[in-house]
Every structure is written in structure tokens, then in C-alpha cells.
Length: 223
Ligand code: CA
Image 1: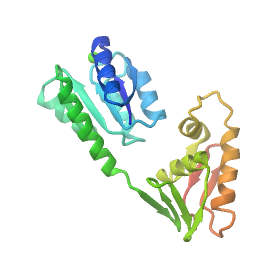
Image 2: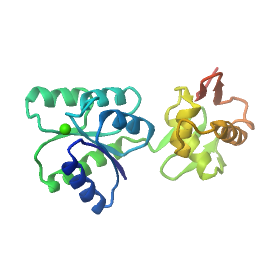
Image 3: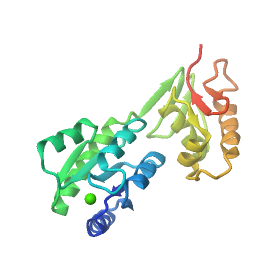
Image 4: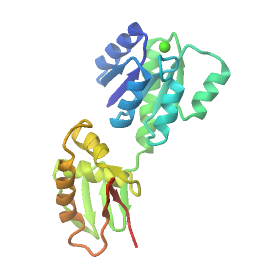
């Protein structure tokens, strides 16, 4: 389980990081909203602990930007106790909020509860035109025939099918699947897509992975 903490108060951030790490979570910390926005969009976190008052991009804006592309659960940490602030957070798509100061035991209980709900929201099986991906058991079938994929091929297919219908850029795919940054050679994506197509598309009449010229790739049923 990976958690991102976006918090500019160093003491609070260190305290959260230590406590969550001790409880078995993998934790990234950033003190500013711009870096937080980038990390939240480019990485797959199970939960984001988000402070509202941040230098530069504040917590509200970060959440607003994030919700355009991702449904990562967000727990707001806020010193602002006003009802309007809490309502605003929930309306923007936060999953829960915690008022500062808080006891670590309470935070941990909220974290676990949000993570449980998040896990329940994730579909286990995704089916597009006879291509069936079992995300939990990591199995793939097309028209009932099992297809064996390497770990990277599976990660690539999972990303494409979770976002079926969305055109994903090579850069985004490279970041998500290979954890590479913007400057990396995205040719590796084309090579991997070719290998994946050879297994899931080439033997079948209807093709699911499509190249969008100059942009990237999309997985969808095209008639
Ligand atoms: Ca703050």
C-alpha cells in the first residue's frame, strides 16, 4: 500500500511518515502542492493525505486537478474547522477529512477505513469485447483462451484496460509502467505495445489496441 503525504508542516509530515511506515505503508512525502499534483497524477497511490493550506497550489486545487483524471482516495488534513470547508472538500471529491490536531490512532483508523472502501471500489474483472482481464489473479483471456503475459505486459494491459476509451500518451504510459521520467526514450513503449498486440490482438479479427498518431495509444472496441 502506497501513501502520498502532501503537507508543508515539517513536524507533522515527519510524524505521519514515521507512524505510517512503522505500520507497513510505503510513504512518499512532499511539502508543496505543485510537486504533490505531479506525484499524484503520475504515480499510483492507494491514498493521499492532503493538507489544505499549502504554499503555491493549495489542497483544494490539487484535488480538483487530480479528479479530472484519477479517483485516488483522498483524506484531507485540515486545521480549518468551518462547516463550509469540510463540505467543500467532500464536494470536490475528498473521501474523508481529519481536523488538526489529531491523535495518530485516529488517523490510522481513518486511513484503514478509506483504504477498505477504495479496495471495494476497484473492479476485479474488466471485459472489453471478449478480452477479459482479472486484475486480482493477474489472468488474461480472450474469447475464453488463456493468454500468458510477462509482468510488464500485464502492467501495460492493466493500465490500458482500466482506462479503456482514453487516449494515453507514451510519456504517461512510460511513467506508469516503467516509472520513467519525461526525458526517457518512449520507444520502449512502442516495442512493448507491439509485443502485447502480438498476443492479444494479432490472432483475433477485432483489434482493441489502437495507435493514435502523434499522441499515444487507446484500448477500445472500434466498429
Ligand atoms: Ca499547511
